[in-house]
Image (cartoon, rainbow, N blue to C red; front, side, top):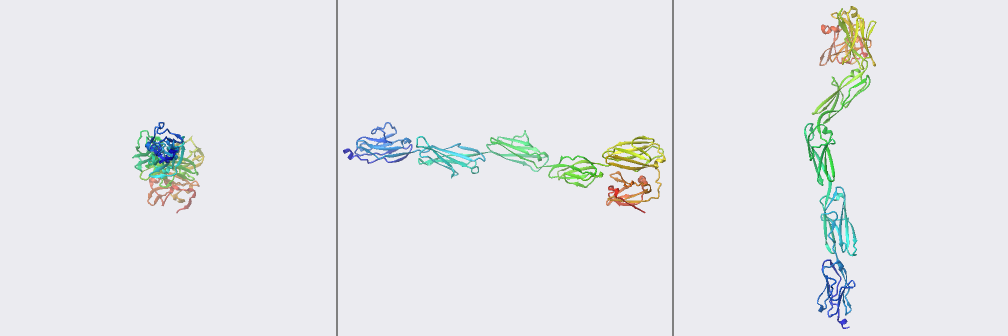
Length: 583
């Protein structure tokens, strides 16, 4: 009873919070008490008196004689997180319970995939940071450029010991909110480490090569040197260059530069540079602005069409800079079309000939292509209507026929005789094909006077119709024989004036000289018309006229009558003529 009355706690353990690894002392002082003192942990005695041999980190310290029985714990561990009491056994005294709370700092945080996090350009960034084995659970924040990033997801897991927890934080950043080279920090803290622990990652945005293809110089004239340079930025770095032109690989070039003498094909066939890194390849191509003269893209074809049908020629050129196309008829300065297509409506026989499609690239060059138009129509006969022979000798009269398609039949007729080929008495017919047409020759042996009085008719037929020419034979060296002539003035649309003779014999002859050749035109009454081109003036063309009988000897005698001036005689349209008598 005396012990009870005297013993009292002058110091009792208090609730404490301590960080794991630090030492701690729980005080217990009972002055005047000399009995047994026990330390109780979670209801269990740690030992008897000062003997705590079962707990090597635990020691009872203080002056025993003064009643000091303090509990010293070295390097506090999580197992020390408990309720402690100090008991004076003989005095039946117990201290108040003291809660020792042990704080455990989180382990160093870890960002998954660090210290460098790589992702492809255009992909979002997901970062995960772990802060494990903390008591209490660690809080995690994300920091970039000194600023806290909001919006992270947070979760924690209680470990098996029921005291520690692991924390996970996930940060999502959109592609537009990240840049390569940025550093992002994960900072974990709890009461044990209020300043926190941190780790960081560096963002590495990987991308396909970013390529620029330059071409110098531009524009450039065909046949000059051009340099292509393929500059690329890539992460990871470039591993390979490949060049191609028009889809075909250029094997002899492997670096970032390609030099070549260019021709027209570089204008339409692009040069491409393909750059490769471990993520893949980027291909970029460029055409060269090559200046080059006209080149045929669609070659026009010669045509053969029926009289009255349309003729359409197609002619396509390429050139750079833009070219000009001109269609003309050979020998004429008239521009018929400036388009690829040349359309001739309802063609006539005079439309037949050579046509030229010409292309011009300004200051670079020009080119042309010639085609032929052949018009299927009735035959056209052109011959000298008075031809000469010697009496008693062999004589010939010739008939020249142009015909597309070729004539099916050619016949000579005089008096009651018709002869197409071969020999009949004194007469023989021979036909020769030439590049320009067909020449049919009527040969007469032993010319007699009656032959000079006979009218010979040359007629040709094909599937489109026929044409006839009347020819007279004149004795070589003879005279005209007709001195009193009746002159007629023939006025034709687009033609001018013609002068002729021998109307009473139904024979009037017209010979029009065009491009150095003789052209005969038949009139609807069976007459023929004859004109002679004399010379050119700056104001037009001058013609001389004479009786038909004088035409064959005109170039020798120059015996002429009458003179008038007119133009475009070769466009004579006999069907529209008017006949007027002249004094």
